[in-house]
Length: 151
Image (cartoon, rainbow, N blue to C red):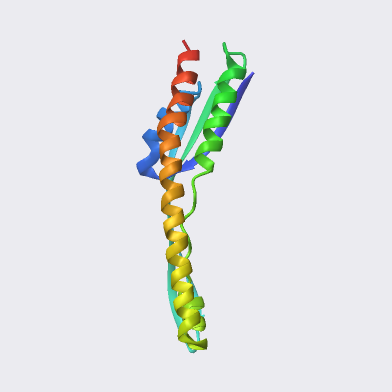
């Protein structure tokens, strides 16, 4: 049986994603770049503005045979790799409106907000470094192991 999957990626990530997917037995079925611009009018107060929204991505469609040799082990390694990629930590969000509201309540709450943000940023940098290290060790091992099972 043939299974398919589609991914929406940035144009700059297209080749990287194709290479990664090939390690798990996927072959590229189709690639389509989507580059759209949509314009509409929005009212703001007494004025009307033309707003344009742009979207640019590549839709990749992959397929693979579920009857291929070592399919279950390759799928297991792919799941581990995907879980590792998805565990990338997110940077803290600095909300300028929250900061100003707290600052208006007093200097101390505003300063505390900045201290908390700096602490979260430091924790993020540490977590991101650890995640990157795992990607360079475990992630590469998953890719190499899966690729070796394809031969």
